[in-house]
Length: 192
Image 1 (cartoon, rainbow, N blue to C red):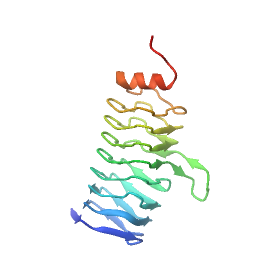
Image 2 (cartoon, helix red, strand yellow):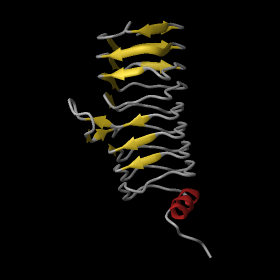
Image 3 (tube, rainbow, N blue to C red):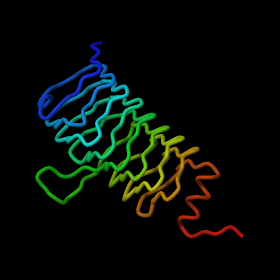
Image 4 (cartoon, helix red, strand yellow):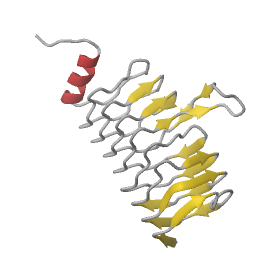
């Protein structure tokens, strides 16, 4: 397994490149334009992607421990079984736009991904399939789930303050008592 440490990637430097079974440690991708870039089974340890441009980028079975992925638009990014455990993901958006269509969305399949212990403050998930995804101990403050499928998703010990599930499907979704009370309060329920 190849290890890349302390690199700073700029502009189109990685455009059209493919990486498999590599470890990126303390690398900066924040100035990069990742166009037609493919990562398979890569680990990104304490890396910073904040503000990078992801354009037809693919992450297959990649892990992002202690990395920063804030201010990202995943609209034209394919993610397969991404492990975002203990990742900082502020102000990002997970959605899938139809190729060639400016304003039409299609389903974004994130099944098999993990967001446990991640900080997702102010992040939006739009038309995402999040069935059986773990959000255990995640900070979901002010997160929006718009038209998402959250069946059997696990929100145990997650911070759900200000989280919006308004148009999403929740069936057999796992909430602890605090999460249940927060969810109920967001729907207007009041305990006597």
